[in-house]
Length: 175
Image (cartoon, rainbow, N blue to C red; front, side):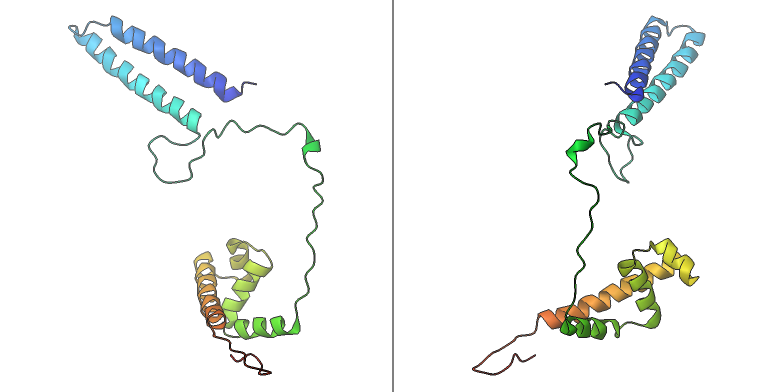
């Protein structure tokens, strides 16, 4: 199954071969042929870059960004029987009173704005842009509030998980 980009790449490669062939026939002793050779070299370079772009799906030589191999090679699944069911419903989980108390203790450490941003983003699933629109603040502020909230939560959790618990006889766990 050939895709449109595969056909386009082959057309570009054929065009590039033709330009290389024409460049080889030029005589560089003539001034007009030198100018033609410069233009043909420029076209060959442009076509090579375009071919590379179409093959990889990203700008050649770009060291930043996500590198996706075969970006145009994605195929649609024809046989939907491969998936048993797409009606996936997560189980609702109940949390204990102790877990609720710990959660409240952690959230109470956050400022009002940090708590708003963190809960809208992490619990409600809003994007940072949506949180910014909802609270009428900038996206950068939302990012900063969420970052601060995560740092505070991580510090608070590390205090709870690094506590040494001892148990002697009938004694309860000591924190």
